[in-house]
Image 1: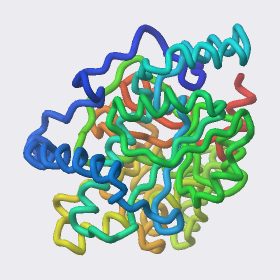
Image 2: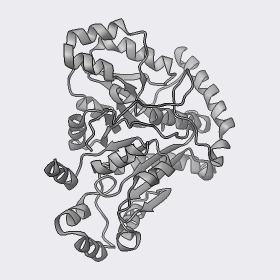
Image 3: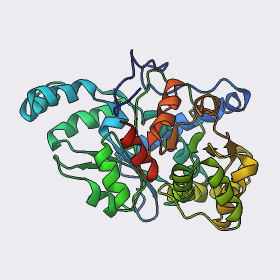
Image 4: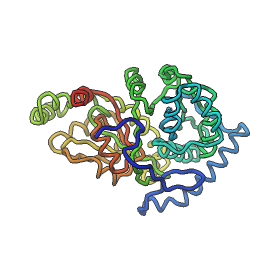
Length: 375
């Protein structure tokens, strides 16, 4: 099965949500139920922040101090219908359609719950560190003409999102702007632009919309990463693809104490870790609103120790590590319920999507060459 960016695998996305802000529902497990009171408090604080923002009282962090996440309008919102108008009727009809429908908000896209979770973390950070600029800073990036900006702003206000930074490029590449924003992560539906960003050293991934969406927490940001060619380089993946599993195990054993080189998403995990430590410093390690996961096909005893030693040497903590020894990742991700999962191989992306997990493809490393050969 193949899958195009933001193309439904089948049927329709089903979201259980409130009429005002169609976000994902909290997990029913006890640890999340205990945070109901906090969630209500954060909703009040969000409304208060929006009021103060209108009055000019809320400061925005300098990009160099913040963790900047740039999201394309096509992954933050569902724009399937508008995209068809553009493809079938051209740019002028597309712009006319957008203006005619500018008071009709877009529905949530695959990045929506992730963005809401980032805002929930910001609420906690502002409560603990009122003057700190170490926050998530959200930038909406779109190739759209400025005329479409009115509908995007109306949609953001409809969903009560706290996004003030826009980058509307009118069809030009946004990569230069991403560098100016000191972007820590770029999420897009355009695989070519994602590869361009990666080539410039910007952590980036292509997002996909699954048929169904697993319910995720509204109060704890949960981010899952693959290891090789995502957090780490594709050095070991190359050994496996070229020489097979036995040679891979032999290589990992011989290099157990040699650190893996960094992969394209290492910097984003590092940024998450810095924010986590701000909560730890306030005695909130057990109530931290950020949780990270390593979900890898590596075996624990045979090849896992090198990955763990590398993370430790980098000074990075991962909250949970799952070494699956080649088992499917989809069922594990269904239990984790991350807001986003990063992997370099499309069959893992597809397996995650089948289980309702929002997955993002990192087109990096030797796996891309093998995938192209298989097509």
